[in-house]
Amino acid sequence: MPLAKSDCDLLESASVYRALDIVRPAIIINCAAYTQVDHAEHQPDVCYAVNADGVTTLAKWCQQHDAALVHISTDYVFGQPSENRMPWTESDVPMPACTYAASKLAGEQHAAGVPRHLIIRTCGLYGPVAKANFVDTMLRLGSQRSELRIVADQQCTPTYVEHLVPAILQLLEVALATPTKAGNLPTDESLWGLYHLTNSGETCWSQFAKEIFHLAKLDVDVQEISSLEYGAAAQRPSYSVLDMSKYLSTGCRPLPSWQQALARYLTS
Image 1 (cartoon, rainbow, N blue to C red):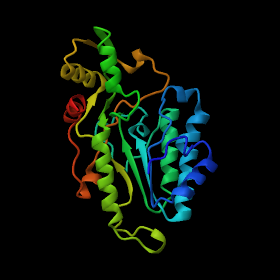
Image 2 (image 1 turned 90 degrees about the horizontal axis):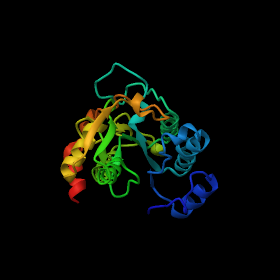
Image 3 (image 1 turned 90 degrees about the vertical axis):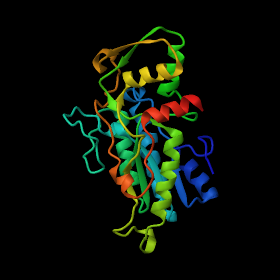
Image 4 (image 1 turned 45 degrees about the vertical axis):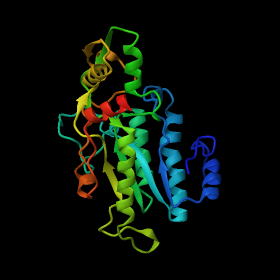
């Protein structure tokens, strides 16, 4: 049963408890987040209230009611400058470089307190239910302008929501089938925990934009610029491609490439 902000406001713990006490879910999937990355630099209290404190409330309710918690996190936890150019694994140490990323990492830590939890790090979500996403923004701007300046030094893997959701549900099904001890504590063989999950491959935002315009048949000249030239308030990761070996080791199906995902979205 989906709960909107009007039903369950993460800024108000009483609202969360009231809604969950009525629904009594066995599994909570937390898709809510403060995602205005640049605004978070000026609104850290609100950002943390949603991305960290709100998760604490969900985690406490799950602990009290033996419920499982699925929490959506971000590749931005790998935001500090690094020489690494290999996809990050779940065992790599997070290095958040902006308020948004730090708040999401704090949320991960709270979610991990639930015995049966799945923490899903993903990247650059777009789709019909992803508001103000990069793809739709490029389509809008590309229909209005003949030239756009787009960052070329942030390597990542944008991910299509309609590919991500079935993958999460498949992973959840597999985790639920693994053994637990009394009180829902996972055994050593349990598949609960932290996972990286995106479409496959990697690109940068300027190349992603070029592919958008190519598939949409929009004649737009993409001028590649640096993050420094763009001048965003919050620091973004220069390389945040995520390794999905752990997810694939569970027997779950791999996600399509980012190119296939984009083509699917633009023709759906």
